[in-house]
Amino acid sequence: MSPENQAIRNLDRRTRPEEIKEVAATLLKNAEKVRERLDEIAFDPQKFEDLYTEAGVENDLRYVENMNRLFDQTSRHEVIEGLTERDVKELSERVEYEVIRGINVGQWFEGVGAYKTSEFDDIANGVDVVLEIQEGKNFGQLGLGVDITFSHNVEKKFKRIKDEIDNYDGDKNRLARVKYFDSPNTGTRGELNNLVRAVIAVDLPMLKDMTGTKDPQSLHTHISRHITLLEIQHQLDVFLRYAEQKNPAATKPIQRAADFIHDLVERLDSEVRLQQSEYTKNRRADDALVKGLGMFAINDGDE
Image (cartoon, rainbow, N blue to C red; front, side, top):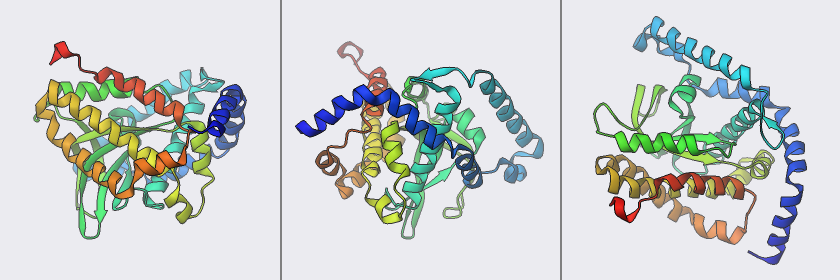
C-alpha cells in the first residue's frame, strides 16, 4: 500500500464514527424508496398460488408477517457504532439494490443476470439474489444464491453454509433453496434447490461510492464489481476445499459455480484491477468475511 493510502487509512480510523453517522443519515433518507423498488422487482408469492395453493402461499405470507413483527420489537436496539438494527437492515437493503443494479444495469458479471427473491425466501432461506447465466442464447442456472449484507456479523450466515455442506447427501439434505422463482429465459418456475450460497458484504464507504455512481458505463467500470466478484470467488474456493475433505458428495455443485466464477475473474482481470486500484474502502467488510470463513479451516488431524 502506498504511503498516501496508508495515511488515508489511518485518518479513516479516527473519523469513522462521525462518517458513519453522516453517511448513514444521508442514505437512510431514501430507505422507503429503496424498499419499494426492491418489492417491485422481487418475486410475488401470490403469483405462485397455482403451484403451492392459496392456503400454502398465505401460510408463507403469515410467516413473513410474524418475523417482521418480531423484528420490530428489537429494531431500535443499537448494534454497531450508533446504528440500530433497523438502520443496518435498511442499509443492507440499499446494498442489495446497488448490487442488483450493478449486475443488471452495469453488467458487472458479464453474461450473468440477478433475480431478487421474495421476502419469504430472503427471511426463511437466507437468499437475497439468484444469479442466472444470460450470455447470448446460452441461458441457464448458475446454481448460485447470494446473501447480501451491510452488517459485519456474518458468522451466522457462514454457519448455515457450513451446516448445509456437512449435512449434504444429494437427496433430503441439499444446499440452499428458494421456493419462489420464475425465469422467462429458462422456463424454470417454482422451487430452485441445491444452490451454492455465497455472501456479498459491503462496508459503508464503498456503499457510498456505489450510490454515487449513476450512469451505466461508470457503474460498469466501478471497482466494486471486482471486489464483489473476488469475494464470491474466495468463498467458493474455501467451501470447495472444505467439502473435498469433510463431505465430498457436496463438491459437484460448488465446483460448477466456482469454475464459472474463476473464468469470469480471469476474463475481467479482477485481481490485477483491484490491486492496481489500491482501493481500501471495503476493508472492514473484507476482514469480517475472512474472520467468518475461519470456521471452515481444516486441521491436519481432521483429514
